[in-house]
Structure formats: structure tokens, C-alpha cells
Image (cartoon, rainbow, N blue to C red):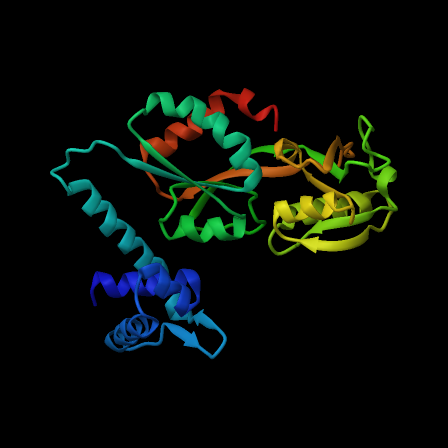
Length: 301
């Protein structure tokens, strides 16, 4: 077993598709498949379930993927550190963030953090919570800003930060477009563009809870997963949508964003920070300290 075999397996585990993984590794699919087969033979276990349409990790493969990902990252970090005789003092901090945090909280936090570490490379990955958590667990990310699930992996530390306010997105020519604020009763009969539950469970549940709390049933017209898709559907006049207030900073010429009145029982969308349990990285600790010491950066969310 060598590092190249591990790289090939990690690529397949990330993509769950031999063609895309081979393209990522700049290899022929047949060569990549041979690397994986040799690795499985050497380990004496099946790591992947293959069919004509799907590739999936076996139970053993999922455990091996986490460890292999960590080893590949550690190998690369070691090579980067010592290549060139330690002449480059730069270090990389890898941050994952959901879309609204990537637009609001993270830039405000980095405005305080970067001046303290001008030599640091900071990589920001924007994605959904369900995709960021595995990357954090595997060591590809140092810290993530997410909407924490109800059940959190025991290997992670999660700290609640704040709750983001929400707005109603409506077509620019909609009858509600000039309102200074709305409540659910104002749009109870409107077609609703609803966030897909699996990908955005908190946004989905907030909309459903708002209607349920008012004794109403939403008229769901479309389900959508990506933020830009939701706003495009709204802009096309197919319905209205409840979205995080920071969406209003996006370039959406055909959409108006109206402040949304929420009942006391519904507090908005939770935002948390997460990192690997036992992580003693001083930079992660400093970032969390900045959050605690500068509450003003969360007030506009």
C-alpha cells in the first residue's frame, strides 16, 4: 500500500464516480480502477460497492476513507512544510462555511483575524452543512460554520454562535414588494418555493413551522436545493420564499427582499462553529476567542 493508492481511493470516495475521480487524478479510469483493486486485494477487504450506475463505500470503506483522507492530508502537509528547507513560513487555514455565513460572518471575522496573521493563506470552501461535516471529520477543513444538525458526531465540538434573521423574497413586481415588513398571514395564499429538506433542513423547517404556528398550510409550488435556484424561481414569478436576510445582498434584479416578522417561538436560523474534538490548534482557538470578544460582528446577521 502506497500514498498513490490512497490518493486514488480518496478521490473515488469523494466523487463516488470513477470517471470524475480519474479526471481529478489526471488518470485513465482503467488505471484508477486497477489501483483500487490492488489496494483491496492487499487489504483483503472490499472498500467499494460497484454497479453499472453507482459507486458506494462499504462499511469498512467508509472507515478506511476517513483514515486514508487524514493520512493523505498529513502527507501533503508534511511535504509542503519541509519542501525547500522550511523557507516559507506561510501556513494554510481551511475554513468551510454555509452560503449565508460565507457572505456575512466569515468576512467580518477575517477582517479581525487577517491583520494578526498577514503571512497566512486562508482557503474558504462554501458548501452545505451535510457536505462540510464529512470534510471536517476527514481533516480537509480546520473549522466550519454550519447549521448544526440535531445529532452531532461525537468526534466534533460544536459551539452555537447566533441566529440569522430571515426575509421574504418576492418577485420585483409582486403586490407585497413595497411592504416595509410582512408576517405569514400576508403571504399565506402565495405559492411557496421551499428549501429541500435533506440539503437545507433548518430553512425547510423554519418555513413549515411558521405556517404551522399560524394554523396555516403552505401552498408549496416548488422544492429547490441551491440558493441561486430558489431566487431564480422567485424572480421568474413562480412563488415567494423565506431566505436568510443576507441573501438580500446578492445580485438579484428581479427579486425584492422584505423583512419578515417571526413569532417569539421561532428564533430564526441557527449558526454554529465546529472543529475536531481535541484540536489544540492555536489559530482555531484564536478564531473562537475573536467571536466571543466581538459580538458586534453577529448583530447584522
